[in-house]
Image 1: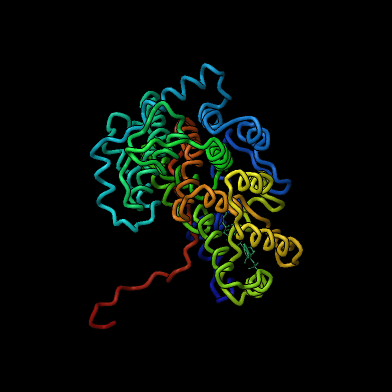
Image 2: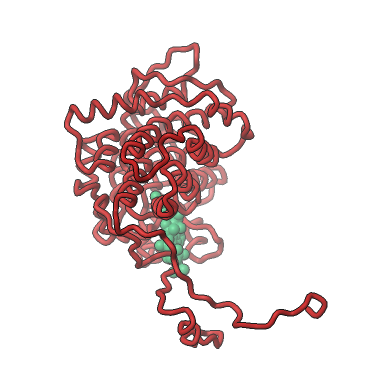
Amino acid sequence: EGEDGFDISALLKETGDVTLDTGFVNTASCSSKITFINGDTGILRYRGYPIEQLAEHSNFLEVSYLLIYGELPTQEQADAFDARLRRHTLLHEDLKLFFNGFPRDAHPMPVLSSAVSALSTFYQDSLDPFDPEEVEISTIRLLAKLPTIAAYAYKKSMGQPFLYPDNSLSIPENFLRMTFGFPAEPYEVDPEMVKALDLLLLLHADHEQNCSTSTVRLVGSSQANLFASVSAGINALFGPLHGGANQAVLEMLATLHETGQDPAEFMRKIKNKETNQRLMGFGHRVYKNYDPRAAIIKKTADEILGKLGADDPLLDIAMKLEEVALADDYFVERRLYPNVDFYTGLIYKAMGFPTKMFTVLFALGRLPGWIAQWREMIEDPATKIGRPRQIYIGEGARDFVPIAQR
Ligand code: ACO
């Protein structure tokens, strides 16, 4: 019997045996060969390769290939993949019109998801999830066009003209140029910026069954096409408890800086629950030790910020918050450590991105993971349409009451 006198066993008799696992804390929704995480020991591997080794020796292009096709590419395969992507960066001229329809102050995430959803209308020749050639071309189109869409979302928000992609550049170089360049002016791509961006994209590339990836799989399990499924994933990522956290972290740090509030006092209010705010960028559903991606970023944040010429007072506040949290029982007992988003915003800010673009950058990074997971799901003969059960706790059967008698 439940706390409110509710007879759960009687209800279960009517419902059948189901497991209640709110938030899927302990329920695996699929089996997967893509990403391995051990939250207790802080391990993350893509297709068996430790994230630390990939961060040090690989790049986003190779890692995208690895996630989607299962193996690291040979030089020949990497070159062919790169060349193919460069040929598909252009957006249809009519798709560009979409950007004009959105208000200039719109957040770029819904702009991104709407444009990706619209790809289903422009590429009706590649929507069959069971035709390997169609899946392949939609994979390439999505990987190549999302950076262009993201750059146009930025340009729209700035009221600046769009730039056509320059396919002599790599995907991250092209993205930076289309974002920060101007049509009549030469744009010098800064190799330090490219390196920093590439690392951040690589670190976000997959993270097994997180909220947005599970959304991509769930939508795809109805045999919805890749564009429709990824568009749904982008919307899931927009939430502040998921991808939106990188924006929320920076807003939190900026408020602390502007108001001059003592970080320790801010933390005291959070842990005493005097505010319903959380320490953004802290905590993770799976990592209960340390987020290995945060460890890599923290190690490089100082170096990257230095190279980008940024001496940001918000970095000092971030370090102070981390120091207080790591020594505080509330955070230690709940095993709340910095997650990947705690430091990324500072780097994006140093690169010149406005806070609204941070989650878009996360989406660019997570895209190969979403695609790899969607393809694995579609190729798996064991896949069934995702259809969770529930435990009904509403009214029992009752007779209809005519409106005059209610
Ligand atoms: N600040 C303060 N307290 C926290 C925080 C936080 N960031 N995160 C969790 N807690 C507390 C909760 O209040 C709760 O305390 P209680 O037991 O006293 O009620 C306890 O820790 C457990 O929290 P849950 O919400 O049950 O943990 P869950 O696993 O569901 O949430 C999540 C994980 C959403 C990441 C959470 O830690 C959070 O909200 N963090 C801040 C947002 C954030 O940084 N999100 C990015 C996630 S990583 C990513 O998407 C790349």
